[in-house]
Image 1 (cartoon, rainbow, N blue to C red):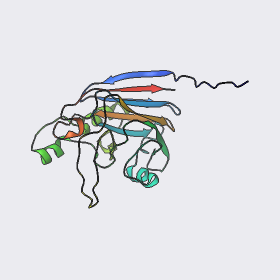
Image 2 (image 1 turned 60 degrees about the vertical axis):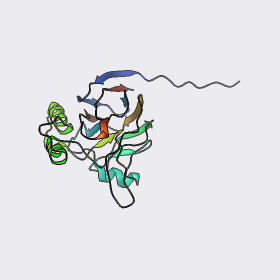
Image 3 (image 1 turned 60 degrees about the horizontal axis):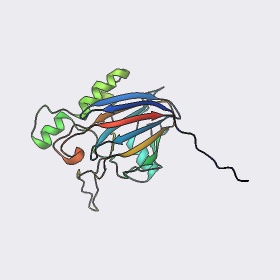
Length: 207
């Protein structure tokens, strides 16, 4: 007689909608999972992650890319810290294209690139949300941009291209240690990273 194995359903700890142009953060315990859902599609999500015990040990793009052997992250890739410790691992990914190069938008770079002043930005969102954890502007590092499409050409040319994510696409990350996650639902309206019209996203924490 064969016994069928059943996988126990995950327990939902928290579910929240982050409005268009909004921000969010949470402490996530080791072993918990964070799902980020692109509710409407074509919406970039700027993402920072820190060790909860020692926030100075935060996401490090060069360490992550060296160990992934790619400038892109996808299912199976681990996000590493400045001390080369695993922070979170991407365990599910229905989109397959996420940016690690472009960093976050700011009012200052928007003025330089697009000639517009005093725009809302991911940098402003990060600064506000980081203050909840006694962190500040100096703790903003080159971040992951989930669902953002930044192709690199053979000659090294890069550009922010239209997102390929569809409504309902998601990523799910497993916390490899206790972490603090900070998200800016990108408010950019001057390039196609958020479809020129930012939309809400959803986050779900499970264990």
